[in-house]
Length: 236
Image (tube, rainbow, N blue to C red; front, top):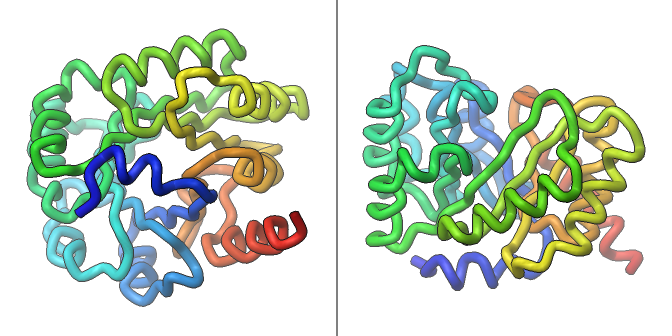
C-alpha cells in the first residue's frame, strides 16, 4: 500500500472517482473497468445501518477505495447517525481504504480515526461542502490552510455554482492556492457539469462522477466524465 505522501504525489494527472451510494451503484462497481474509472468512493453513510453487504463487497472491488461516512450537515445520507457510529464505521471499513474522506469540520472530533488511518498507511482527504453557494476566494484559501494544518494529504471542495463567476472563483482558487496541498475542486448545481470538466483540466486531482444514478447535482456518469476528460487532455 502506498503511504500518504506517495498517494498525494502520485495524483499528477486528474483522476476519476465513482461514487458507490446504492445497491445499484455497488453492483456497477463490482464490474467497473480501469478504463472507465480510477477510484471508488464508498459512501458508507448511504448504506447505514445496513452496511454488511457493502463491507463484504469492499475487499473484492477492482479499484482503490475512498471510504466516506459523511456528516449529515455536509450531505450525509444518515441524518440520525452519531459521531460514535461514524468513528466505528470508519474503523470497520479501514482495511479496505486507500484514502478516507472526513469533513474539515470533523477533523478534531475524528482525530482518533485519523490516527488509526495514519498507522495503517491510509491517506486523508479533508473536505468542505457548500450546498448553498460558492465560498469567497479568501474563505477557500483559509479552509485550505486549515486542512493543511490538520494533516490533510488532499483538500476537497464541492460548492454550489449558480453563475459563471462562481466557476471563476474556483478556477482562481486552483490556480493561486499556495499551500502546495493537492486539491479536488468541483461545482454542483446549474454549472456543475461544466465546472467539473474545466476544473479537472486545470488542476483538480480527484473528480467525482456517479455509478447507477447521481447523488449530487452536476455530476457526470463516471464513464462519460473519463471519456470527455480524455478527449480534452488529448488535445493539449
